[in-house]
Length: 123
Image 1: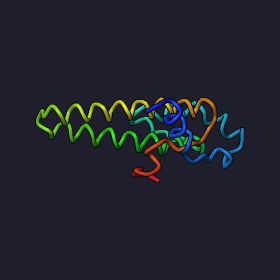
Image 2: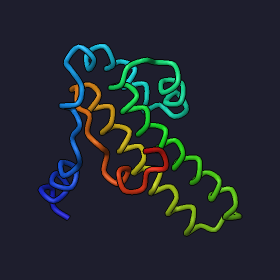
Image 3: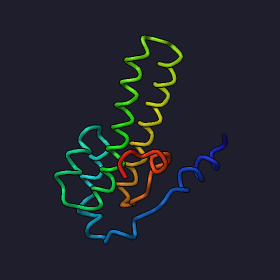
Image 4: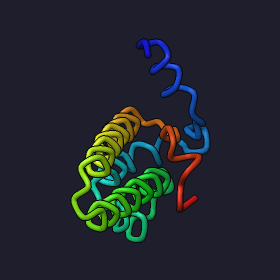
């Protein structure tokens, strides 16, 4: 897979930035960054009154839920090496998606993360 295909895959997601005004984005940047740190996304979603932060918190909650599901599957796999390797690869993907979400938060974009839009538990 070449670099241009990866860029197209990442950039080919829905952008909701125009739904938020600049002031709301600036006020919500810090908490939207925290939204990608595991269970903190739940705290941001329920305790922060900023729609930009909540947009990112929903994605963070979905990543946290996927990570939790993977942890449960790993514990139930009874040490099967191939399952554990596959789960670790998926964990790397989740970490990369968190980094992408943090990047979007820093630059003030409200873009859906790849995969998260299709397979999200919380919409």
